[in-house]
Every structure is written in C-alpha cells, then in structure tokens.
Amino acid sequence: MERPERIEDGSTTTDPLLSTGGDTPAPATLTVVFSTLIAVSGSFVFGSAVGFSSPAQNGIIKDLDLSVAEYSVFGSIWTIGAMIGAVMSGKLADLFARRGAMGFSELFCLLGWLAIIFGKNALWLDIGRLLMGYGVGIISYVVPVYIAEITPKNLRGAFTTVNQLMICCGASLMYVVGVIINWRLLAVIGAIPCIIQLLGLFFIPESPRWLAKAGQWKECEASLQRLRGKDANISEEAAEIKDYTETLQKLSEAKIIDLFQKKYAHSLIVGVGLMVLQQFGGVNAIAYYASSIFESAGFSGRIGSIAMVVVQIPMQVLGVLLMDKSGRRLLLMVSAAGTCLGCFLVGSSFLLQDLQLWKSSPFLALVGILVFTGSFSLGMGGIPWVIMSEIFPINVKGLAGSLVTVVNWFGSWIVSYSFNFLMLWSSEGTFFIFSAVCGATVMFVAKLVPETKGRTLEEIQSSMNSFT
Image (cartoon, rainbow, N blue to C red):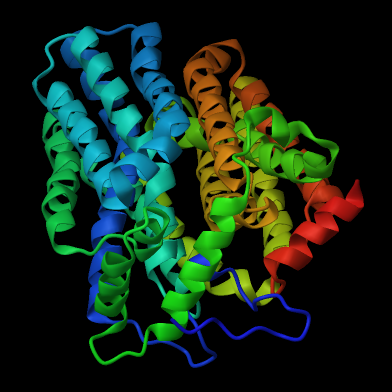
C-alpha cells in the first residue's frame, strides 16, 4: 500500500484520522449525507430531551400532583444519567464500534421515553429521565466522533456542526409542539427519532477509522470506498489511515493522572473552564424552564417559547457560517457578551416588576430571553466543543474529552436542579448571577482561549504548551 505524501519537515499535512488524502476537494456522496442524517437523529433526540421539560412542566405537575422539589428532580436527574453515560462513552464507542454505541444509547433513550409516556407517578418519570440521560450522555460523544471520522476533510467542519444544529432543532420542536399538545403525546414525538436511528443504523457503514484501529483493514477499505463512491481513488487516504493507526498503537496508553501534567495545564484550564462557564451562564435553566420564566415575569409562556424558536435556529445557522470566517475567539466573546446582556435584561425585568416601576417589564423579560437565546446559539453553544476537540494532543484526547464532557453535564445538573430554588430566593438575583458569569466568560476568552481558526493541530498544541 502506498505511503502518504509528506511535506518537507517530515510531518503529514493533516490529522489522518480525520481527513482525506490529496488536495482535491472530495464530494459529499449520498452515503456520507445519509449516514450523517442517521447519526444526527441521535442529536435530535438529545435536543428533544433538553426541550421537553419546559413545555411539559405545568401539565406534569397538574396531572401527577408534583411539588416543585419533585419536578426539579425530574428536570435535573437526566444529567446524572448523562454524566454516567459520558464517563463510559469513549470505552463503549471503542468496544461496540461507533454504530453499536449509537444503537446501544438509543435503546436507553427509547426505554426512557416509554417510561415517561406510561408513567403514573414521579418515580417512573424519574427512572425514564435517568435512562434517557444515560443514552444522551453516550450520544453527546459518539455522534460528532462518527461524523468526523466518515466525512472528507473539506466537509468535516460543516457536517460536524450539523450535530449542534439538530440539537437546537429538537429542542425547538418541543417548545413549539409542546404548547399545543399533551405532555404524554409530546413524549411520543420525542421517541420517534430513536426508532429512526435504530432502523437507519442497519443501512450505514461503520467508521473506517474504527475498523482500522480494530485491525480490520479489508473492512476499513470497503467502508471507505462506500463512503467516497465506487469510482473514487481511496488508496492515499487508506494509506494515511493505516500509517497513522500504526503510529498511534506505539504510544503508551494515557492515564487520567497524565492530564494534570504541567504541559497540559493550559489546555485543561481552557477546556474545563469553557464548559463550566457555559453551564453556569444559565443556558439549561432557560432551556428547561423557559415557560415558567415567562409566566413568572407576567408574559405568555406559549408565545415566549415560540419566539425563542424563531430566534434560535437562524442564529445557530449564522454561527455555523461564521465560525471559520470570523474565528473562534471573536465569535465566543460576542456570544458571551450577548448572553450577559440578555440575563441582565431578564433580571432587570424581575426587579422592575417587584418594585412596580414599569408595567411593560414582561416585554423586557421576553427581549432578554431572546437576546440570550440568539447569542448563545451564535457561539457559546457549539464552539466550546469545537475548541475542546482541537487543543488536546491525540494521546490524551479521549481521556480529556471524557473529563470535559462529565464536567459539562455535572454543571448542567447543578444549575437545572437548583434553578427553581434560586427563583424562589430571588428571581432578579438569579439572573444577575448568570449575567455576571457570562461577563466573566468574555474576559476568560480574551485572556486564555487561543484562536484556532486556520491552524494545524500541531501549531495549536505547540502554542498551548508554550503558554506554560
């Protein structure tokens, strides 16, 4: 098999596990498009789970006579399951392959939705939510990995960001449909993408990169040929995959303690820091409890939820288009500044309402939520995950990715569980705290986060090491 061409300093031009050979742009074959759509059905399930609890809140509390504390458990317990799933996601994706891991995760999601559909008390709903969280924890890792491993290098960025877009679409569908139908029917709609992915997995190829790591070279080439087209010349890409896989197998297996070496300090601070700031900026509090926030501010929960959808999806698409043009840092700072302003406006609305100084304060809450939602969709939603995938060296990327994902889900659980209690303490104070965290994010990005646009992984990692 022919070896890949190298540049003068002896290094390959790109990461072979995530690229195609040659400089000619590869087309998006029907197999790549279909495989991506089946994979992001899991992302849609993720988004549906996120968006379910907000429109379902009033109906569930009324029908099952739940207290605020009981519903807070239901709204937040799925993040416990997601943390468990996130810890196991890397091992499961290696053990069962990418398709197997997606199918495994969807079984838990489907069982979770069924428990909610037929649940008669808080216990069954909590069990369903926990199962769903476990499945989503695996999905949040394996879906972007699978897409990145099957797509050509010239299409990888656009195709991978479809993952975040579909999460947004799933949540948006729940917001819109949830205002007009019963919460049990809403759960039935949430289960449909699980079935679509489970059936679709039988018709898509396994990741050629996973097959190479497993030593299945013939199957790797067959999968690659199917993805690139029957007439495509895959010899150079296949050789690159084999060359890189053999190099990777010579490296010693990294341990969790290795992440805390000085040379990885900057990468770890950036990766973990972005996830902590993303969650403690209040995104999941707003996502899970949007309807109740609008109603607490004196505005229609239904109109507010629909308005969120109208803003969210176009801003998510705009963020995808701008990511490789404006750069990660600028987009992150603009996005974080917007979320800071949005939370400040919502907090001001509650303050004016308490002081009875302005009768139109509910509209200020609507504007604040929409500014937050649009700004978050623009950058803070997806870019932390992109940067996380770029700043860690390949020998610790799996462990680092699992750690960062667990931190993200743990932060999500803390915020989603405590939010209702914080609102009882002080509605305006809660959102002013979120605003302060978002403001701190701007400074964090300006001081510590590197610009990774248009740079090789080696250049990025070299700059991270030089920081220490």
